[in-house]
Amino acid sequence: MRDFTEIRGRRPEPQPPRDEVVLRARESLMRTIETETAPQPPAVEATDSRAAVVRLDQRRRRMWRVVAGVGAAACVAVAASIFVVGDDGLGESGQVQVIEAGPQFTLRQAALVAEKSELVGAGPIRHMRFVNLTDEGQPTYDAYVRPDGTALVGESGGDLQETSGYLTSAQLAELPADPYQLRTRMLSLSSELGLGYPGEAPDRALYRLATELLPDPEVTPEIKAGIYRVLAGLDLEAIRARDLGVGADRAGRPGDVLEFTFEEGYVDRLVIDRETSALLSTETADREGKPAGGQVYVSAEMVDTMPLAYA
Amino acid sequence: MTSRHVDTDALREVPAPRDNELIARSLTDPDAFAGIFDRHFATIHRYLARRAGADAADDLASDVFTIAFGRRVGFDLEYEQALPWLYGIAGNLLHGNRRRLNRDVALLARHPRPEAPVAFEERVDSSLDARREFLALERRLRRLPQADLDTLLLHAWEDLSYAEIAEALQIPIGTVRSRLNRLRRKLREPDGVDPARTGRQQTESRQGEGHA
Image 1: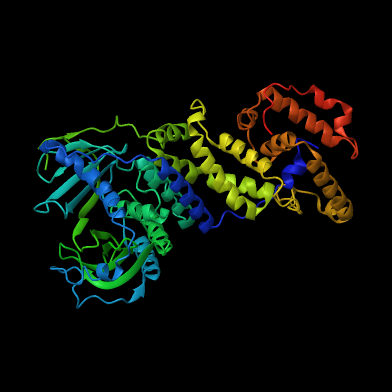
Image 2: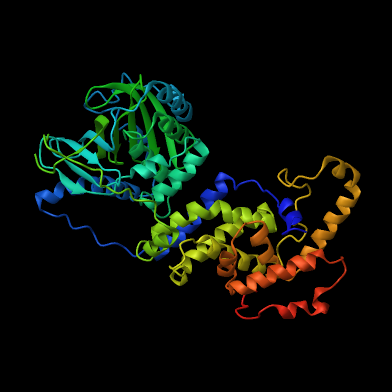
């Protein structure tokens, strides 16, 4: 027997663990972790105006922690009506129509985004312009993200501040297009980025990561198609998806509206370009119907160089 | 916006954190340990499914990561890879639960993998012989001491290096080498020779034997 050839040749090749087995095991681990996690003191909001911009990006992440902790009692009926009575073009009652289940909708987006979208610009720097809906006056921001995930962020036309915590170009380049592999990689990434919270279904973090990746100019159309496929396969026990038909984002751009209702009773809506499947905006409301976060993605492109920090 | 620009050529890309970095981070940010789960759950599950069947693997693999989280303080951060450490925990769980595990789970695959080619005529001629040999091999493996079987399967099935096996089983690397050499000889011998009576086991270094 040459170095156990026969034993090597008769190695059993079991099926990979089923999704529910992985989710249950991960849930069990997160519960264990939760018991060890000491309560965090409340974050002290800095009053320095220069620090405010740096906090912008942290706040978006922290927002999830807030809404994730809203409470276990489901309040779906209330939440589902939040946008119907909105004061803008988003989800006006006349336009709201449940036409398809979420999974079919996102699979349709997957086909569309792969076919119709393309990378904009060239160069190593990701430039994203967006409106932060929960900031007073809803200012427009620019973010210039370097390949290492550090960035300059600030109000358009104003000073830019150094910040970090964005996905690196290497992390984006490693994303596989195959939805099964992508799902696994996204679960891992969302964990590394701290997008998940103890006790919640891992798919929640997966969803959060998807909304970070879809507006990113460096994510290829092929990968965006994979992300929509991953969204189609979300654990619908934890997240319910509905296609609300045609609506518009807060900038007035028309798009298909996909609504995710979370078990705590808050609602997240994505407005997706009908032609290209580009993600136009995300918006979250808490169980009381108050805006808890949201961004309108104005533009995204790859550029050659970083701007200087100050205008 | 701005009119002046800076060159970013010098910017360095940051690779994904290594296992030991994630574990170190989990000491202050326990959530970081979920990254270890996401990277290695499938591999550990596969190993346990090979050893104890898929049903048992579902629960055991989950236990491996819960136990590992509780023991992460003891993880030697000098090692970049957590997988050997996790294999070690998985092995301990297999032994700890061996009484309730299904002993009828076949150890070896009934049919060889395609990448282990056997000549066509050989396969046809010797199907009965092959069946007999296969059963004999399975029987011999089942008679191996647990420590030997762990070493052998981590080497032959999981493709761990000697150093990784040493880390997984908490034994010196020399013990891994001598153990595998002894197994090579033992498995070549005619069936029926009880190695416990040959005295060959005495040749193995006993230093660091702690895996039960």
